[in-house]
Image 1: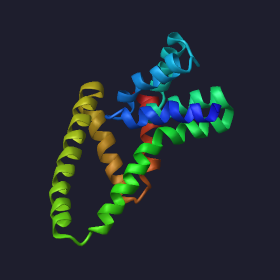
Image 2: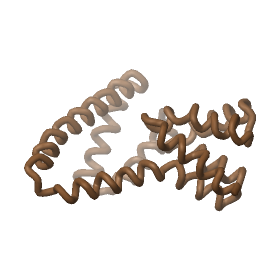
Image 3: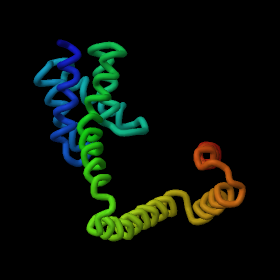
Length: 175
């Protein structure tokens, strides 16, 4: 029954938490603190602070930690699976529908309209990253990192993961 409770504690916020991890935090808190009493509000807030300081989605970090604390390694796996299961199921369902109608002219037009929007959103995000970096470390550092990353990835064909690692080391040493 404990594993079922772990599953439900993270599956329900996964369904109702429209907007991703930050939107589901109050729902997870309700399940963990109020419904099941696994943690106090203070413990939950401390765990949330630690989860926010680590890379990755906050909902899965919360699910993994709380699931492990309540049910060991199996509880951690169940908690993480429960937090991603609603999105996974919906994605499989929608991809099935999209695959069924992949040759439809309407679906083709839809994808043609979505591509430029995604490109614009990515461009806006890149511009904001540039502005934030420029304000934080200065123009010359941003240009050095941008140009060297471009050369390493495009000209020298170094995998982007290695370039990210190199820039992290550069930032740790020089910035």
